[in-house]
Length: 319
Image (tube, rainbow, N blue to C red; front, side, top):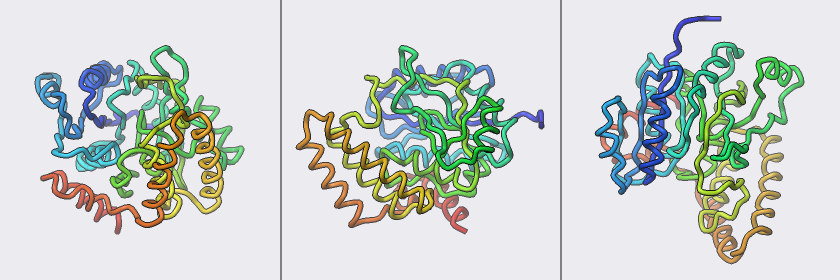
């Protein structure tokens, strides 16, 4: 086991949640393992987010975008910016309503040092404000992992997983440099599922229960909670993922498609506004089958110098 210091950069994507973002940044500064860099991508917030961060003397790099690129675009921007630095070993990705506990990174780094060399993605345990497991971000065992892999993960107090979320995801920088960025055209929803699954395919992902973050959503809800009009993105992006992404094998797509349909049925059953959900389902399905996601460098063109960085990364990853 190498005792060389691992250099870790954090990427936080922010949109109009200034107070939560400032709390998240404060929690990053309070980590027991210091971060080497903190990058906040401000998705064209209108609540003074960039100004508030500019007054923070503790050192945060702020990338302010002139249009909202969604979570998918924001993480693509932040990743591309960080991966330009060859000294960075791991990148810690999180939403602006993610508040890491002081030892969250320490536990991730501990596992990163001990894990098999093909481990490219680590995920934290996510709880709500009252300490309960957050059902929106509950990691699940990799259903396709061998018994040996499951037992190997358990010996390290971890769990072999097939995907994880941008609420708190640690990514090996070299793996991210070899891979195209999150699909910016997803905008929101399933971007982290697609990206983490793509990184893990043929490699390894682990959930680290000792690494705890608080996801400060307004309510404690799961992925089948009523999303209203935004259900369009769930439907469209899941269809895009199954049609075009290389993140999952054909058998995996069959399993996850069946699980998706069951979840959608539960969403409709629990909804108090099925007319809105039905309209969103039709629109998402129409877009999902009639279109395909544009290349991320095309979606994120016109954002100034950061667009050139993204274009360089994508060109290198496609080779």
